[in-house]
Figure (tube, each protein chain N blue to C red):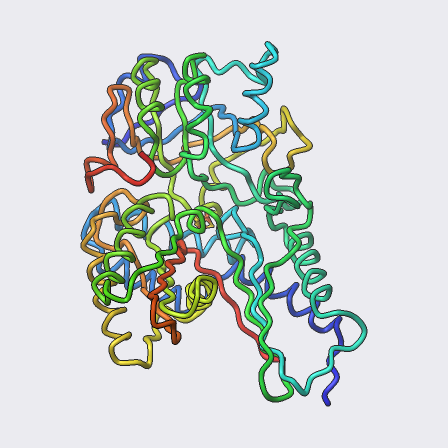
Length: 184
Length: 280
Ligand code: SF4
């Protein structure tokens, strides 16, 4: 099924998605990858606020290439989500509603997703030039010193993705070729 | 003795880093066409069409094919009758990477220390492999390597008794475990023989071979074809979302080895298999 969905995302919208659905996302998403997740964990350990409130929000695991003059962003495809698995349950428990990346998630992440009614979406890995066309603006909001790994607030328009893990724990990767990977 | 200016090396490396990240070689483009024609899953076909479109946009808009513009792996075959004038070869290469990644709007993805993890800011240093050969020319291959696929690469120190079946199982296990993470359809580089490091280097080097070109050794060629067929029955498919085309090619290099060993390295590469070659 093809669906138009929104970011930030309501609980109801997340609950209505099923593994295998094709979606187009419009709205605001935040980028964060390895280093930014490490910093967010440190911030929480120190009892500080996060750079954005995860409640209802969508994180895109992505570090862009530099933008040319006059363009909002460079190449902007997904990075491997499992590297963020260690940090993800703490964000899900604070209301993070959806994640966009590529590749499998571990069982702790899946459990935390089901517990909180969140979804995990995959964008096509290696299609960074194509996906950049769906990003209309980009602004660094935290950790500027991390360069490509800084947290960016993006406005996206009809950004294409596939629902891989739904809020009931259904996993498209398991369904299409079964079995656990070495990551589990 | 032929003199080649270090600056000429720098200029070439710079241009090659940029070009490799904006355009795939024609043989990789043909491999995409063939894949899109053979894929039977509708979603898989759609993803392959998107990847073709992605390549077109990269070329016309001058934007990298993938945001992970890689760590710059550089192979140089340096003729022994060549003298590099006006600077060191290593510094010339790194300067080329620095200029290419800065002026070409490529992502800086290298940290100075594996544990302290501070970004070097210019994507240096390159990973440089130099081989001294006969003659008076310099052959350069630049292969920017993304880490989604690099992270899924494996090395297996098999026993001689494991034989060719052991090799097949190892390669299949590596591809299956990589699943969606390596950005399929993948190109699989396999090194068999040598020592621990030699087989890893062969696995990397063979990724720079055209996906259309098969090994000249008859049994190795057969192994490449058999493995490609087996991999394309795993069901992983484009984007790892199911389908027939999981790999575009399996490239194998072999080398003599020790009586006690059978090293096998599997270097996974995504469909953004960048390699560019020049002879100076
Ligand atoms: S594995 Fe390749 S295609 Fe995928 S994100 Fe990395 S460089 Fe890009």
